[in-house]
Image (cartoon, rainbow, N blue to C red; front, side):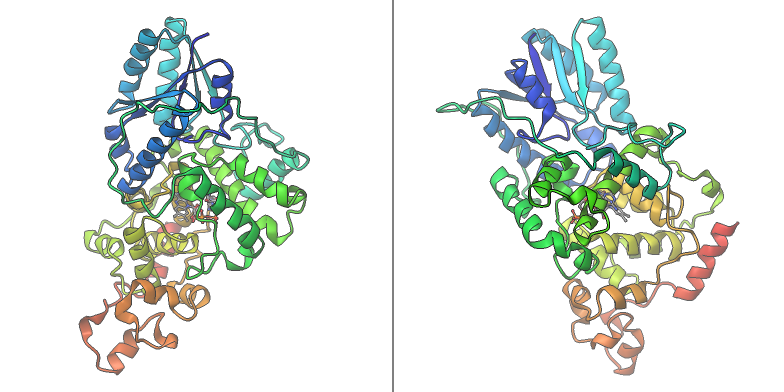
Length: 464
Ligand code: FAD
């Protein structure tokens, strides 16, 4: 059967079982659809699109070394993929299309329509699950339903996989002496350049993390001034690295990792399972892709519409240094530390009582790792509207969070150089200190809300 591989957010060669299956079936061609308009509708950040294009250029070169042609085709909206795919299949007599599943609603609808059309044309369309370790719908409770709490989901996930020693399928092709790449090179704006896209550099990043950081992750992961987390989220979001590949690498070094869930080294695996949890949720609750609250109980919360407050949050001008430094990290680098994502999301939805959907969109527009399932999960967790979310009466205090996780203000000073000379003990809320030294009033923004009053307002709004 003449087989075609369709790349999506699975931009990798060697740990891509669906691709390997296609190659084993004799595939010589692959496609990728550039859906610029659709991506805009999904709020994809320019920095993420740049990373995607750079990686496409890279894998196109790699595929050419195995005599596989990558065809990169413009299909502005998902709706355009159908005719583009069918005319490609027609032109190249393709009888079988293989791809990896995506779980968001628009993607699922696109695939359902394409499946129907393929059936009509006698083309087989097969979808694999390369973005998760546990295929969605396979981790269920005794009533055969999706868990609505993370811990039992994790326990069941571990029960299913604790005896598995993961491995990758062998790569089936030999390199040509001279591969010729005829694909046009995609223009990139270079905004993502700090993030390498070649497999050698990525292997080094993964190895360094596993060898040097995995065991200290538990102690360091909450300190934003330390590079204590893996920084792999942009690669996982675009499928440049697969979660399974990471587990294989970890098990090579820590063979018992899945049976030692109480150990500190396990903590990082926990995060990978959170990622799976949110993917399983988005696949099983399409309302999440539509922007609905997971917990309908909170549909009656009245969010404030306040452009000025939202703008202050976006621009890092709330007068709460940790919040402001975090928002500047996001806007300047396209990435934000997890602890800070929780703090700023809580600040927007509780202190400012602004709809979590506004924050969710702003994050997507700027994050290099923007990913609907995890982003929606994170925002609804912080806003208390989500599945297994933070209870509404727990409102992070941005000053104590700052004292705990950035005690010397190292992170704050990096992104708020205007506070460089403020002593450590005042850095977390410097207003009284700045007034006492009679400093320039304009050197830092006044606090836009009072913590205690804002907290009470949020709790009252959620109680209603
Ligand atoms: P590490 O700590 O090294 O974790 C390893 C991997 O596990 C991450 O790369 C990520 O794929 C996954 N992971 C870690 N924490 C979570 C989590 N809480 N939920 C789901 N997966 C997780 N992550 C995204 O990938 N894309 C997003 O758009 C996104 N938006 C978020 C929004 C909010 C409000 C919050 C609170 C969290 C969000 N996260 C998102 C989760 C998390 O903040 C990032 O995955 C993490 O900061 C990425 O850094 P890292 O790769 O160094 O993570």
